[in-house]
Amino acid sequence: MFKKVLIANRGEIALRIHRACKEMGVATVAVHSTADTSAMHVRLADESVCVGPPAPKDSYLNIPAIISAAEITGADAIHPGYGFLSENARFAEIVEAHNITFIGPKADHIRVMGDKIAAKTAVGTVGIPLVPGSDGEIRSLAEARAAAQEIGYPVLVKAASGGGGRGMKLARTAADIDEAITTAKAESKAAFGDDAVYLEKYLTTPRHIEVQIIADSHGNVVQLGERDCSLQRRHQKVLEEALCPVLTDETRAKIGETVRRAIEKLGYLGVGTIEFLYENDEFYFIEMNTRLQVEHPITEQVTDIDLVREQIRVAAGAALSFTQNDVKFKGHAIECRINAENPKTFRPSPGEITHFHAPGGPGVRFDSAIYTGYRIPPYYDSMIGKLIVWADSRELCIARLKRALAEMAFSGVETTIPLFIDLVDDPEFCRGEYNIHWLEEWLAKKEWAE
Ligand code: ADP
Image 1 (tube, rainbow, N blue to C red):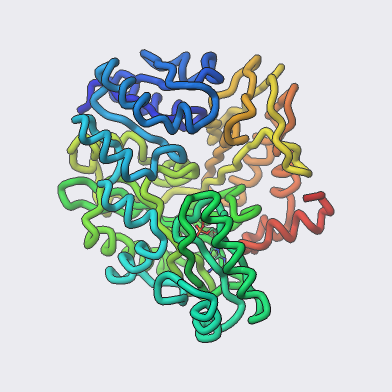
Image 2 (tube, protein in one colour):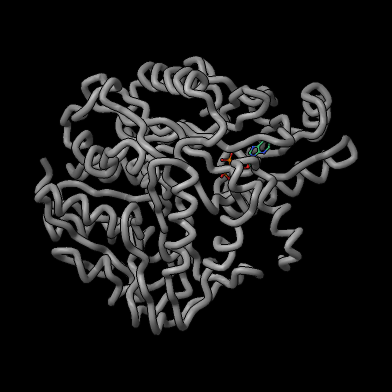
């Protein structure tokens, strides 16, 4: 096992990794920007190193500074968390070149899955069903028009390097295709430095369902069921559930096994998520995330498996501590992403949290790095915590979620808690009747301004 892990991240995920390390008897090193000197991940870590000024490109994305921090402190592994450098294949290679273990998959897998066109080809060959779409990259407007005609409108133009919902443009009819291609390319070039795009059939009422897997270096691959992440705003997840409220056990077992076998064939290592759109009882692959995800705790709650602990163990060369047969799903879990934002306009609300009261009681978990007196810096993501609630049934889980939301108190900053309080009271939500567009329609009905 590792002796010391450097955590190349901040906020709740840095704390989550720190917690797993401490429970395993592993020392931790926090890195931080000058804006995060008094952050909880820095306070709790055994050691900390300042790696640069506030802007992420100068600190949390500053590869030379992070590698130096690992060398100076003698860390033998680096955990990248999610976001920042977690899906940067070059970073994984540099870490390994310094004889430090990257807690994640092999660089080649990160690279292939980071290019959505290459990813579709790779998973298509191991039996994963794909969204119908263009045969690889679209290189000209003429090619786009022909491909869109063949796929059938509406079509979605997507960036090969896309992420966070950026570089995605909808063409409802042939009249929209030229502009969709041009704007998706420009947006992708600006955000990711790459303007490669491809086309996909636009599914009109799918759910977003993703399967969690974990693999060790001894050939064992286990699938841990799915999460339903259909409740999104601007293609960003807002609330997630495990398991999906509408899948039958039979469908669940089938897609889980398809994914498990595919991952086995790919020779993948570590945790990963295969994301699908699900419509009319069919699954369509959209992408693979080669890292721990924000919503991993709901899977932990329904499987009783500590994913971060297992992720660290398999990175250190250990075999998984359970088999597929040991995985039993129990009860229901829901996660709400609490952001420091105005709940109606979604405008970020940085500043000092002058008072905070955490929710508690049976089945309630709050993964966060905030505290009373904490000043939320304006430079980073506005998510300040994840409320995760578990109960025996979905009905009880929603009741528990309601009371947990009501227990939370904040002063000094605005949060998205009022939105969740309203949402969990909606009869359609309570019946599990929603798709990827439902939340935006619900928000529009509320006449909550964009
Ligand atoms: P990103 O990496 O930017 O998050 P994804 O490919 O994971 O992009 O897609 C994010 C979201 O965009 C999906 O959860 C879904 O809501 C929507 N989406 C993606 N592809 C399609 C599609 N072919 N049809 C309809 N919606 C889609």
